[in-house]
Amino acid sequence: MVRKSRGRQKVEMVKMSKESNLQVTFSKRRSGLFKKASELSTLCGAEIAIIVFSPGNKVFSFGHPGVETVIDRYITRNPTQNSGTMHLIEAHRNATVCELNMQLTQVVNQFEIEKKRGEELSQMRKAGQSQCWWEAPIEELTLPQMEQLKVSLEGLKKNVTKQAQKLLIGNSGPPQFFASSSSGGIFPYDRKAGGFNPNMLLPQKPSMGRQKIKIEKIPKKNHLQVTFSKRRAGLFKKASELCTLCGVEIAIVVFSPAQKAFSFGHPDVDSIMDRFLTRNPPPQSSGTHQLIEAHRNANVREHNMQLTQILNQLEAEKRHSETLNQMRKNSRSQCWWEAPIEELGLQELEQLRGALEELKKRVTKQTNKILIESSNSLPFLPVNGIGQVGNFETKPEISAAPTLPHANNFGNYGHGIF
Image 1: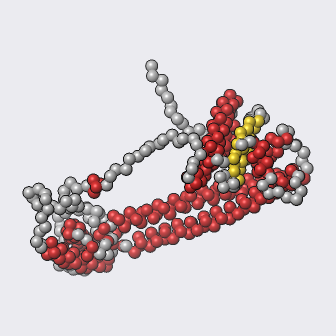
Image 2 (image 1 turned 180 degrees about the horizontal axis):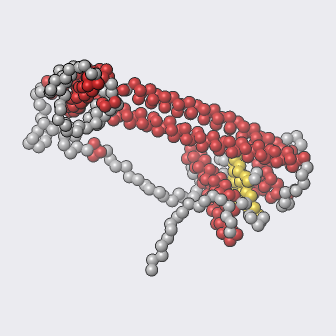
Image 3 (image 1 turned 90 degrees about the vertical axis):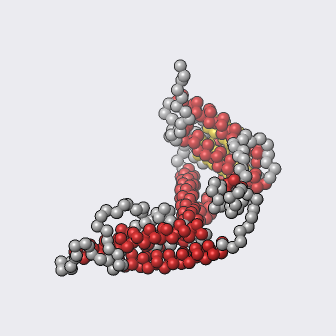
């Protein structure tokens, strides 16, 4: 009997209630976290230290070149005149808060710029929709709008006919002969020839697919920086999930190839480092120092939360702006009839002329319909037995006419032609 598998499922990011599941998850995810850290240090040559306190308060660590070496470098990167451990930790925390404030200010400013850009694009889109009233269905247009549309259609039809005749006269010169079939007249790789596919001329780019990366230091500097940035973010994400699922305390310190320090900690990096170095549990006294520490830690966590939220909003605004820009580009590429008549080909002109004639018929019919309805609403207007004659010298049809395609389609032509 074949055993059914539920497949790979998404794990809900909440702390596990069962002790056995918690221990197994902690063991597997800790091994995966250390493996990711080892690959990061090998590929990018980064110095890294990870300290994890399990739910049973057992310590696990990983470091390259060593945990104590990386921690000492991290703590003493801003030395002061008094080299005591407490003053170093205070200086590090103050520097961290200042750095977070600067990052938060920069991200807020960038977010405001992207937000304004998105609002401008939305406003431009709304303005374009309000100005192009002829793109609305014919049934929603008023009588003056339809009269104006009919006049414009007649003028455009004349220009299209004139340009089509001009192209026909220009193409009626002496034909050029190419080595082809007996039918002749079809140029090699002609876009108007039947069965032509422009993709035939483009070589298909082979895809390498997902490949296994060789774990060795990356030689190219730009590739190294990109890899470090992506893998560092993935490492911190794995650490955050481990904290949430298993309720562990963890600290990660990474020095990039450019010797810039990055850190992640829960509840905070400094307390985990102090606990690891002293191998003592955190003091339980409620003195003034603990209150100050708690306040600073709360400020750091608040800054981290604000920074994360604003980064998410910034990404959303960027995606919105990219979507609007893509919609504008697609609209320009698809609406070929909005180009000047002189730039259209003969086939496009013929299609446009047919669409204009169909639209003209529908506009005339709708105009006469509105005139009949307005005349019927007046009590003393004479109406003959055949029907009311419209202002456009056409008589409305009494019998039901076959349903025509929507005015906005024209067979995908005629959108926004004025």
